[in-house]
Image 1 (cartoon, rainbow, N blue to C red):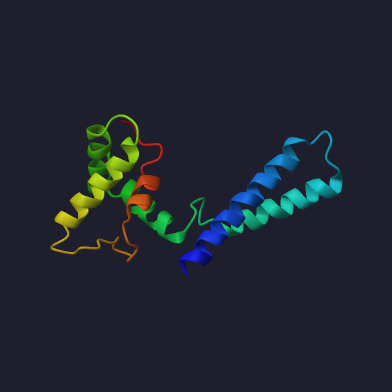
Image 2 (cartoon, rainbow, N blue to C red):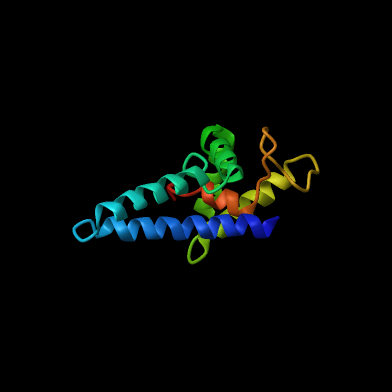
Length: 130
């Protein structure tokens, strides 16, 4: 199952890159190429979940960016980490805090049931100020 998800992400990334390449050369691209690029963009957007690469990333981001307590925790973790790999370290720190405060739950999840992971938390932290 993980292989299938990875394949969709890789395929989606390649489609988006192809669409960007074609539309970036609008002066030399034929109308057929531009139509194909639009088709590729629509397919890419269909594989996205409200601009996020997966439903899990979207759900975790929704909660972290809209729940005041989670948002403040994320900001505290970001401010505590500096240097290369700081966002990943901040996401790991936040996940640890969620595990510790989750009443013994080793695998914390959003109220909707989406699991918090280092990758999903790191994705949700994009654009947050230090």
